[in-house]
Image 1 (tube, rainbow, N blue to C red):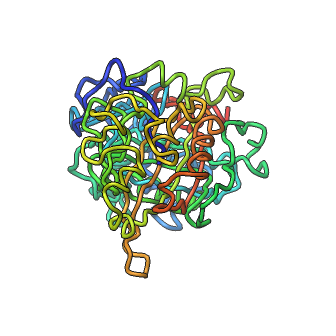
Image 2: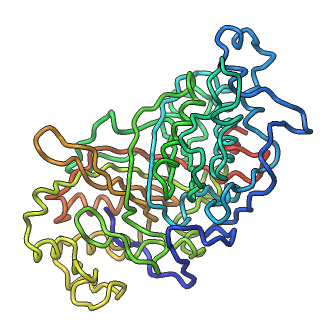
Image 3: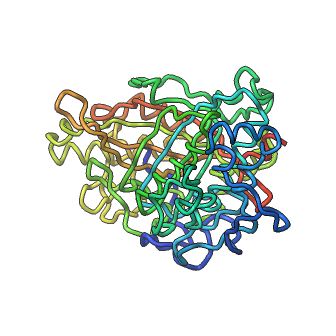
Amino acid sequence: MAEAQQPAPDHPEPDNGEDPGTGKDPGKDRGTATGAATGEGAGGRATPSRRAVLGWGGAGLALGAATAGGAVAALHGGPDPAPAAAGTAVPFHGAHQAGIADAVQDRLHFAAFDVTTGDRAELVRLLEEWTAAARLMTAGHPVGGGGFGGPPQAPPDDTGEALGLKASRLTLTVGFGPSLFDRDRFALARRRPQALADLEPFPGDNLDPARSGGDLCVQACADDPQVAVHAVRQLARIGFGRVAVRWSQLGFGKTSSTTPDAQTPRNMMGFKDGTRNVSGTDRAALAEHVWAAPGDGSDWMAGGSYLVARRIRMHIETWDRASLQEQEDVFGRDKGEGAPVGRSEEHDEPFLKAMKPDAHVRLAHPDSNGGATILRRGYSFTDGTDGLGRLDAGLFFLCYQRDIRTGFVPVQRALARGDALNAYIQHVGSAVFAVPPGVRDTDDWWGRTLFA
Protein backbone atom coordinates (compact mmCIF):
# COMPACT_ATOMS: atom_id res chain seq x y z
CA MET A 1 0.00 0.00 0.00
CA ALA A 2 2.92 2.27 -0.69
CA GLU A 3 1.90 5.95 -0.88
CA ALA A 4 3.15 8.47 -3.03
CA GLN A 5 5.70 8.12 -5.58
CA GLN A 6 5.87 11.07 -7.96
CA PRO A 7 4.72 14.66 -8.28
CA ALA A 8 1.98 15.55 -10.72
CA PRO A 9 3.10 15.43 -14.38
CA ASP A 10 3.71 18.29 -16.74
CA HIS A 11 1.41 16.76 -19.37
CA PRO A 12 -1.54 15.10 -17.62
CA GLU A 13 -4.18 13.12 -19.46
CA PRO A 14 -7.86 12.85 -18.45
CA ASP A 15 -9.09 9.55 -17.08
CA ASN A 16 -12.81 9.54 -17.77
CA GLY A 17 -13.36 5.81 -18.05
CA GLU A 18 -13.03 5.93 -21.85
CA ASP A 19 -10.07 5.97 -24.21
CA PRO A 20 -9.66 9.58 -25.34
CA GLY A 21 -10.11 8.30 -28.88
CA THR A 22 -6.93 9.87 -30.14
CA GLY A 23 -5.17 6.59 -30.88
CA LYS A 24 -2.41 7.70 -28.52
CA ASP A 25 -1.22 5.62 -25.60
CA PRO A 26 0.12 7.48 -22.54
CA GLY A 27 3.78 6.89 -21.77
CA LYS A 28 4.19 4.51 -24.70
CA ASP A 29 5.16 4.31 -28.33
CA ARG A 30 2.52 1.95 -29.62
CA GLY A 31 1.07 1.97 -33.11
CA THR A 32 -2.65 1.96 -33.82
CA ALA A 33 -4.38 -1.23 -34.88
CA THR A 34 -5.12 -1.38 -38.60
CA GLY A 35 -6.61 -3.83 -41.05
CA ALA A 36 -9.42 -6.33 -40.57
CA ALA A 37 -9.63 -9.68 -38.83
CA THR A 38 -9.59 -12.50 -41.35
CA GLY A 39 -9.56 -16.25 -41.39
CA GLU A 40 -6.50 -16.38 -43.59
CA GLY A 41 -2.85 -16.73 -42.80
CA ALA A 42 0.07 -14.98 -44.40
CA GLY A 43 -0.23 -14.63 -48.14
CA GLY A 44 -4.00 -15.16 -48.06
CA ARG A 45 -3.80 -18.91 -47.43
CA ALA A 46 -6.79 -20.31 -45.56
CA THR A 47 -5.78 -21.90 -42.26
CA PRO A 48 -7.57 -24.42 -40.03
CA SER A 49 -9.26 -23.08 -36.94
CA ARG A 50 -8.25 -24.17 -33.48
CA ARG A 51 -11.34 -26.38 -33.25
CA ALA A 52 -10.20 -28.18 -36.40
CA VAL A 53 -7.05 -29.18 -34.56
CA LEU A 54 -8.35 -29.72 -31.04
CA GLY A 55 -12.12 -29.96 -31.15
CA TRP A 56 -12.84 -33.15 -33.05
CA GLY A 57 -11.50 -35.64 -30.56
CA GLY A 58 -9.57 -38.52 -32.08
CA ALA A 59 -9.90 -37.16 -35.59
CA GLY A 60 -8.17 -33.96 -34.58
CA LEU A 61 -5.42 -35.81 -32.76
CA ALA A 62 -4.87 -38.00 -35.80
CA LEU A 63 -3.79 -34.96 -37.79
CA GLY A 64 -0.48 -35.19 -35.92
CA ALA A 65 2.54 -33.15 -36.88
CA ALA A 66 1.01 -32.07 -40.16
CA THR A 67 -1.28 -29.61 -38.35
CA ALA A 68 0.83 -28.90 -35.26
CA GLY A 69 0.93 -25.21 -36.14
CA GLY A 70 -2.73 -24.95 -37.09
CA ALA A 71 -3.89 -23.32 -33.91
CA VAL A 72 -1.25 -20.63 -34.18
CA ALA A 73 -2.05 -20.02 -37.83
CA ALA A 74 -5.76 -19.69 -37.12
CA LEU A 75 -5.19 -17.09 -34.44
CA HIS A 76 -2.73 -15.14 -36.58
CA GLY A 77 -5.53 -13.80 -38.75
CA GLY A 78 -3.44 -11.66 -41.09
CA PRO A 79 -3.13 -7.91 -40.45
CA ASP A 80 -3.66 -6.37 -37.05
CA PRO A 81 -7.46 -6.20 -36.58
CA ALA A 82 -9.24 -2.87 -36.51
CA PRO A 83 -11.00 -2.04 -33.24
CA ALA A 84 -14.59 -3.28 -33.23
CA ALA A 85 -15.72 -0.17 -31.36
CA ALA A 86 -13.89 3.06 -32.13
CA GLY A 87 -12.62 4.99 -29.13
CA THR A 88 -12.69 2.04 -26.73
CA ALA A 89 -9.57 0.10 -27.79
CA VAL A 90 -6.05 0.59 -26.46
CA PRO A 91 -3.42 -0.06 -29.17
CA PHE A 92 -1.80 -3.45 -28.69
CA HIS A 93 1.55 -2.94 -30.43
CA GLY A 94 4.41 -0.81 -29.14
CA ALA A 95 7.73 -0.59 -27.35
CA HIS A 96 6.11 -1.37 -23.98
CA GLN A 97 3.26 -3.67 -23.04
CA ALA A 98 -0.12 -2.06 -22.58
CA GLY A 99 -1.60 -2.09 -19.08
CA ILE A 100 1.31 -0.44 -17.28
CA ALA A 101 1.45 3.31 -17.97
CA ASP A 102 -2.01 3.52 -19.56
CA ALA A 103 -4.91 5.24 -17.83
CA VAL A 104 -6.03 2.69 -15.25
CA GLN A 105 -9.27 0.88 -16.05
CA ASP A 106 -11.93 0.13 -13.45
CA ARG A 107 -11.81 -3.69 -13.43
CA LEU A 108 -9.14 -6.36 -13.11
CA HIS A 109 -8.80 -10.09 -13.61
CA PHE A 110 -5.30 -11.25 -12.70
CA ALA A 111 -4.18 -14.85 -13.10
CA ALA A 112 -0.94 -16.69 -12.36
CA PHE A 113 -0.20 -19.91 -14.25
CA ASP A 114 2.02 -22.93 -13.74
CA VAL A 115 3.59 -24.23 -16.95
CA THR A 116 2.78 -27.95 -17.15
CA THR A 117 4.66 -28.79 -20.34
CA GLY A 118 8.39 -29.41 -20.24
CA ASP A 119 8.80 -28.74 -23.95
CA ARG A 120 10.40 -25.37 -24.73
CA ALA A 121 8.95 -25.36 -28.26
CA GLU A 122 5.45 -25.89 -26.84
CA LEU A 123 5.93 -22.98 -24.46
CA VAL A 124 6.99 -20.75 -27.36
CA ARG A 125 3.95 -21.86 -29.37
CA LEU A 126 1.72 -21.04 -26.41
CA LEU A 127 3.12 -17.51 -26.18
CA GLU A 128 2.63 -17.05 -29.93
CA GLU A 129 -0.99 -18.21 -29.67
CA TRP A 130 -1.65 -16.05 -26.62
CA THR A 131 -0.26 -13.01 -28.44
CA ALA A 132 -2.43 -13.63 -31.48
CA ALA A 133 -5.56 -14.06 -29.34
CA ALA A 134 -4.76 -10.94 -27.30
CA ARG A 135 -4.33 -8.94 -30.50
CA LEU A 136 -7.91 -9.82 -31.43
CA MET A 137 -9.53 -9.44 -28.02
CA THR A 138 -7.99 -6.05 -27.23
CA ALA A 139 -9.45 -4.80 -30.52
CA GLY A 140 -12.92 -6.05 -29.49
CA HIS A 141 -12.97 -9.18 -31.68
CA PRO A 142 -13.64 -12.81 -30.71
CA VAL A 143 -10.88 -15.40 -30.85
CA GLY A 144 -10.41 -17.50 -33.98
CA GLY A 145 -13.66 -18.29 -35.78
CA GLY A 146 -15.80 -16.79 -33.03
CA GLY A 147 -18.42 -18.15 -30.66
CA PHE A 148 -20.89 -19.65 -33.14
CA GLY A 149 -21.42 -20.57 -36.78
CA GLY A 150 -18.83 -23.32 -36.97
CA PRO A 151 -19.28 -27.09 -37.26
CA PRO A 152 -21.94 -28.20 -34.74
CA GLN A 153 -19.85 -31.24 -33.81
CA ALA A 154 -16.98 -29.08 -32.52
CA PRO A 155 -16.69 -26.56 -29.67
CA PRO A 156 -16.51 -22.93 -30.83
CA ASP A 157 -13.16 -21.16 -30.91
CA ASP A 158 -14.48 -18.48 -28.52
CA THR A 159 -16.65 -19.05 -25.46
CA GLY A 160 -18.87 -16.15 -26.53
CA GLU A 161 -19.64 -14.29 -23.32
CA ALA A 162 -18.05 -11.07 -24.64
CA LEU A 163 -19.83 -11.11 -28.01
CA GLY A 164 -21.48 -7.74 -28.63
CA LEU A 165 -19.46 -5.99 -25.93
CA LYS A 166 -17.05 -3.16 -26.68
CA ALA A 167 -13.32 -3.50 -26.27
CA SER A 168 -13.74 -1.47 -23.04
CA ARG A 169 -10.08 -0.40 -23.08
CA LEU A 170 -9.01 -4.01 -22.49
CA THR A 171 -5.29 -4.44 -21.94
CA LEU A 172 -3.48 -7.74 -21.49
CA THR A 173 -0.07 -7.75 -19.81
CA VAL A 174 2.07 -10.88 -19.53
CA GLY A 175 4.95 -11.60 -17.15
CA PHE A 176 7.44 -14.37 -16.35
CA GLY A 177 7.96 -15.55 -12.76
CA PRO A 178 11.29 -16.63 -11.21
CA SER A 179 10.19 -20.27 -11.28
CA LEU A 180 10.15 -20.20 -15.10
CA PHE A 181 13.92 -19.78 -14.94
CA ASP A 182 14.49 -22.37 -12.19
CA ARG A 183 16.11 -25.76 -12.71
CA ASP A 184 16.86 -24.72 -16.28
CA ARG A 185 13.84 -26.68 -17.53
CA PHE A 186 13.57 -24.39 -20.57
CA ALA A 187 17.28 -23.50 -20.83
CA LEU A 188 16.53 -20.06 -19.36
CA ALA A 189 18.48 -20.11 -16.08
CA ARG A 190 21.25 -17.85 -17.34
CA ARG A 191 18.75 -15.35 -18.68
CA ARG A 192 17.05 -14.60 -15.38
CA PRO A 193 17.49 -10.87 -14.65
CA GLN A 194 18.98 -9.92 -11.31
CA ALA A 195 16.28 -7.26 -11.09
CA LEU A 196 13.73 -10.10 -10.86
CA ALA A 197 14.56 -10.54 -7.20
CA ASP A 198 12.93 -13.04 -4.85
CA LEU A 199 11.27 -11.07 -2.08
CA GLU A 200 12.61 -11.51 1.42
CA PRO A 201 10.21 -12.47 4.22
CA PHE A 202 8.88 -9.20 5.61
CA PRO A 203 7.75 -8.86 9.25
CA GLY A 204 4.03 -9.51 9.55
CA ASP A 205 3.69 -11.48 6.31
CA ASN A 206 1.32 -14.45 6.43
CA LEU A 207 1.66 -15.65 2.85
CA ASP A 208 -0.52 -18.42 1.48
CA PRO A 209 1.50 -20.55 -0.99
CA ALA A 210 -1.72 -21.25 -2.89
CA ARG A 211 -2.06 -17.50 -3.58
CA SER A 212 1.61 -16.85 -4.34
CA GLY A 213 4.13 -17.39 -7.11
CA GLY A 214 3.57 -18.61 -10.64
CA ASP A 215 5.56 -19.29 -13.81
CA LEU A 216 3.49 -16.87 -15.92
CA CYS A 217 1.00 -14.12 -15.17
CA VAL A 218 -1.71 -12.39 -17.15
CA GLN A 219 -3.08 -9.03 -16.02
CA ALA A 220 -6.36 -8.21 -17.76
CA CYS A 221 -7.70 -4.69 -17.14
CA ALA A 222 -10.90 -3.31 -18.68
CA ASP A 223 -13.81 -1.03 -17.91
CA ASP A 224 -16.21 -3.99 -18.23
CA PRO A 225 -15.63 -6.92 -15.82
CA GLN A 226 -17.01 -9.43 -18.30
CA VAL A 227 -14.49 -8.35 -20.93
CA ALA A 228 -11.60 -8.81 -18.48
CA VAL A 229 -12.81 -12.21 -17.27
CA HIS A 230 -13.46 -13.39 -20.82
CA ALA A 231 -9.91 -12.51 -21.86
CA VAL A 232 -8.25 -14.55 -19.10
CA ARG A 233 -10.68 -17.41 -19.72
CA GLN A 234 -9.72 -17.56 -23.40
CA LEU A 235 -6.00 -17.60 -22.66
CA ALA A 236 -6.47 -20.34 -20.08
CA ARG A 237 -8.51 -22.31 -22.60
CA ILE A 238 -5.89 -21.91 -25.33
CA GLY A 239 -3.24 -23.03 -22.85
CA PHE A 240 -5.03 -26.21 -21.79
CA GLY A 241 -2.49 -29.03 -21.47
CA ARG A 242 0.44 -26.64 -21.37
CA VAL A 243 -0.46 -24.32 -18.47
CA ALA A 244 -2.81 -24.49 -15.50
CA VAL A 245 -4.20 -21.62 -13.43
CA ARG A 246 -2.35 -21.49 -10.12
CA TRP A 247 -4.40 -18.67 -8.58
CA SER A 248 -6.39 -15.68 -9.74
CA GLN A 249 -7.82 -12.46 -8.36
CA LEU A 250 -10.70 -10.23 -9.40
CA GLY A 251 -10.45 -6.53 -8.63
CA PHE A 252 -12.68 -3.49 -8.84
CA GLY A 253 -12.47 0.23 -8.15
CA LYS A 254 -8.89 1.13 -9.06
CA THR A 255 -7.01 2.37 -6.00
CA SER A 256 -4.36 4.37 -7.83
CA SER A 257 -4.24 6.31 -11.04
CA THR A 258 -1.68 7.05 -13.75
CA THR A 259 -3.65 10.22 -14.59
CA PRO A 260 -3.14 12.41 -11.51
CA ASP A 261 -5.23 15.28 -12.90
CA ALA A 262 -8.33 13.09 -12.59
CA GLN A 263 -10.17 12.54 -9.31
CA THR A 264 -8.05 10.38 -7.01
CA PRO A 265 -9.69 7.03 -6.27
CA ARG A 266 -10.29 5.78 -2.73
CA ASN A 267 -9.36 2.45 -1.20
CA MET A 268 -11.54 0.23 0.99
CA MET A 269 -10.52 2.26 4.04
CA GLY A 270 -12.07 5.37 2.50
CA PHE A 271 -8.80 7.24 1.88
CA LYS A 272 -7.56 8.63 -1.40
CA ASP A 273 -4.87 6.36 -2.76
CA GLY A 274 -2.23 7.17 -5.35
CA THR A 275 -2.15 10.95 -5.02
CA ARG A 276 1.50 11.06 -6.03
CA ASN A 277 1.68 8.05 -8.32
CA VAL A 278 3.90 8.11 -11.42
CA SER A 279 2.03 9.67 -14.32
CA GLY A 280 1.57 7.71 -17.52
CA THR A 281 2.50 10.80 -19.52
CA ASP A 282 5.68 11.63 -17.60
CA ARG A 283 8.14 9.99 -19.97
CA ALA A 284 11.17 11.07 -17.95
CA ALA A 285 9.86 9.48 -14.75
CA LEU A 286 8.84 6.33 -16.60
CA ALA A 287 12.28 6.01 -18.16
CA GLU A 288 14.00 6.54 -14.81
CA HIS A 289 11.81 4.43 -12.55
CA VAL A 290 9.64 2.02 -14.58
CA TRP A 291 11.13 0.83 -17.88
CA ALA A 292 14.09 -1.53 -17.98
CA ALA A 293 16.87 -0.22 -20.20
CA PRO A 294 19.81 -1.60 -22.17
CA GLY A 295 22.72 -1.92 -19.81
CA ASP A 296 20.59 -2.83 -16.79
CA GLY A 297 21.96 -6.38 -17.00
CA SER A 298 19.41 -8.22 -19.16
CA ASP A 299 19.10 -6.60 -22.56
CA TRP A 300 16.18 -8.86 -23.54
CA MET A 301 14.14 -6.94 -20.94
CA ALA A 302 14.80 -3.48 -22.44
CA GLY A 303 11.44 -1.74 -22.67
CA GLY A 304 9.92 -4.09 -20.11
CA SER A 305 9.34 -3.68 -16.38
CA TYR A 306 9.20 -5.68 -13.16
CA LEU A 307 5.92 -6.40 -11.40
CA VAL A 308 5.23 -7.06 -7.73
CA ALA A 309 1.77 -8.41 -6.88
CA ARG A 310 0.67 -8.54 -3.23
CA ARG A 311 -2.71 -9.57 -1.88
CA ILE A 312 -3.26 -7.40 1.20
CA ARG A 313 -6.07 -8.36 3.53
CA MET A 314 -7.69 -5.43 5.35
CA HIS A 315 -9.19 -5.98 8.78
CA ILE A 316 -11.95 -3.60 7.91
CA GLU A 317 -14.20 -4.45 10.87
CA THR A 318 -11.43 -3.24 13.21
CA TRP A 319 -10.71 -0.24 11.04
CA ASP A 320 -14.36 0.77 10.96
CA ARG A 321 -14.30 1.10 14.76
CA ALA A 322 -11.23 3.36 14.83
CA SER A 323 -11.83 7.07 15.45
CA LEU A 324 -11.51 9.50 12.57
CA GLN A 325 -8.50 11.11 14.23
CA GLU A 326 -6.74 7.77 14.53
CA GLN A 327 -7.48 6.92 10.92
CA GLU A 328 -6.04 10.21 9.73
CA ASP A 329 -2.98 9.83 11.96
CA VAL A 330 -2.37 6.35 10.54
CA PHE A 331 -2.28 7.62 6.97
CA GLY A 332 -0.90 11.10 7.55
CA ARG A 333 -3.66 12.61 5.41
CA ASP A 334 -7.03 14.22 5.93
CA LYS A 335 -9.82 11.79 4.99
CA GLY A 336 -12.04 14.26 3.19
CA GLU A 337 -9.75 16.35 0.97
CA GLY A 338 -6.76 14.01 1.14
CA ALA A 339 -4.43 16.84 2.15
CA PRO A 340 -1.19 15.91 3.98
CA VAL A 341 -0.98 16.81 7.65
CA GLY A 342 -0.66 20.56 8.04
CA ARG A 343 -1.62 21.26 4.41
CA SER A 344 -4.93 22.31 2.87
CA GLU A 345 -4.97 20.68 -0.59
CA GLU A 346 -4.54 17.07 -1.64
CA HIS A 347 -1.62 17.73 -3.99
CA ASP A 348 0.27 20.04 -1.64
CA GLU A 349 3.83 18.90 -0.97
CA PRO A 350 3.79 16.75 2.21
CA PHE A 351 5.66 18.05 5.23
CA LEU A 352 6.77 14.68 6.51
CA LYS A 353 8.03 15.83 9.89
CA ALA A 354 4.55 17.15 10.73
CA MET A 355 3.24 13.57 10.55
CA LYS A 356 3.56 10.96 13.25
CA PRO A 357 6.77 8.90 12.87
CA ASP A 358 4.77 5.78 11.99
CA ALA A 359 2.37 7.46 9.52
CA HIS A 360 1.97 5.50 6.30
CA VAL A 361 2.62 8.46 3.98
CA ARG A 362 5.77 9.44 5.84
CA LEU A 363 7.27 5.95 5.74
CA ALA A 364 6.35 5.26 2.12
CA HIS A 365 7.49 8.59 0.68
CA PRO A 366 10.52 8.49 -1.67
CA ASP A 367 12.31 10.99 0.59
CA SER A 368 12.20 8.38 3.36
CA ASN A 369 13.51 5.59 1.12
CA GLY A 370 16.45 6.98 -0.79
CA GLY A 371 14.22 8.08 -3.69
CA ALA A 372 12.67 4.64 -4.28
CA THR A 373 9.79 5.17 -6.73
CA ILE A 374 7.22 2.73 -8.11
CA LEU A 375 4.19 2.94 -10.40
CA ARG A 376 1.09 1.47 -8.78
CA ARG A 377 -1.99 -0.09 -10.40
CA GLY A 378 -3.77 -1.59 -7.39
CA TYR A 379 -7.42 -2.68 -7.11
CA SER A 380 -9.85 -3.32 -4.26
CA PHE A 381 -11.29 -6.79 -3.76
CA THR A 382 -13.98 -8.55 -1.74
CA ASP A 383 -13.94 -12.34 -1.83
CA GLY A 384 -16.85 -13.38 0.40
CA THR A 385 -16.19 -14.04 4.07
CA ASP A 386 -13.44 -15.71 6.04
CA GLY A 387 -15.75 -18.14 7.84
CA LEU A 388 -15.63 -16.08 11.03
CA GLY A 389 -18.23 -13.51 10.05
CA ARG A 390 -15.72 -11.06 8.60
CA LEU A 391 -15.43 -9.85 5.02
CA ASP A 392 -12.44 -11.11 3.10
CA ALA A 393 -11.61 -7.74 1.60
CA GLY A 394 -8.65 -5.56 0.90
CA LEU A 395 -6.20 -4.35 -1.70
CA PHE A 396 -4.69 -6.31 -4.56
CA PHE A 397 -1.48 -4.31 -4.80
CA LEU A 398 0.29 -4.16 -8.17
CA CYS A 399 3.39 -2.08 -8.77
CA TYR A 400 5.82 -1.73 -11.65
CA GLN A 401 9.44 -0.64 -11.41
CA ARG A 402 12.74 -0.77 -13.23
CA ASP A 403 14.30 -2.98 -10.54
CA ILE A 404 12.49 -4.70 -7.67
CA ARG A 405 15.56 -4.36 -5.45
CA THR A 406 15.52 -0.56 -5.65
CA GLY A 407 11.77 -0.11 -6.02
CA PHE A 408 9.39 -2.17 -3.92
CA VAL A 409 11.89 -3.74 -1.50
CA PRO A 410 13.17 -0.64 0.34
CA VAL A 411 9.67 0.81 0.59
CA GLN A 412 8.19 -2.40 1.98
CA ARG A 413 11.06 -2.84 4.42
CA ALA A 414 10.26 0.56 5.91
CA LEU A 415 6.54 -0.13 6.03
CA ALA A 416 6.89 -3.62 7.50
CA ARG A 417 9.12 -2.35 10.31
CA GLY A 418 6.96 0.46 11.61
CA ASP A 419 3.84 1.41 9.64
CA ALA A 420 0.88 2.20 11.91
CA LEU A 421 -1.31 0.72 9.18
CA ASN A 422 0.06 -2.75 9.96
CA ALA A 423 -2.43 -3.03 12.83
CA TYR A 424 -5.20 -3.13 10.23
CA ILE A 425 -3.69 -5.08 7.30
CA GLN A 426 -1.76 -8.24 6.51
CA HIS A 427 0.01 -9.39 3.35
CA VAL A 428 -1.36 -12.85 2.50
CA GLY A 429 -0.24 -13.42 -1.10
CA SER A 430 2.84 -12.48 -3.08
CA ALA A 431 4.43 -12.86 -6.51
CA VAL A 432 7.00 -11.16 -8.72
CA PHE A 433 7.28 -11.21 -12.51
CA ALA A 434 9.53 -9.93 -15.28
CA VAL A 435 7.23 -8.19 -17.76
CA PRO A 436 8.95 -8.27 -21.17
CA PRO A 437 8.86 -5.44 -23.70
CA GLY A 438 5.87 -4.82 -25.91
CA VAL A 439 4.84 -6.63 -29.08
CA ARG A 440 6.24 -4.50 -31.90
CA ASP A 441 4.19 -5.72 -34.87
CA THR A 442 2.17 -8.64 -36.25
CA ASP A 443 5.31 -10.78 -36.58
CA ASP A 444 6.27 -10.27 -32.94
CA TRP A 445 5.02 -12.12 -29.84
CA TRP A 446 5.24 -11.96 -26.05
CA GLY A 447 8.64 -13.13 -24.86
CA ARG A 448 10.35 -13.32 -28.25
CA THR A 449 13.41 -11.47 -26.93
CA LEU A 450 13.76 -13.98 -24.08
CA PHE A 451 13.61 -17.05 -26.30
CA ALA A 452 15.67 -15.61 -29.16
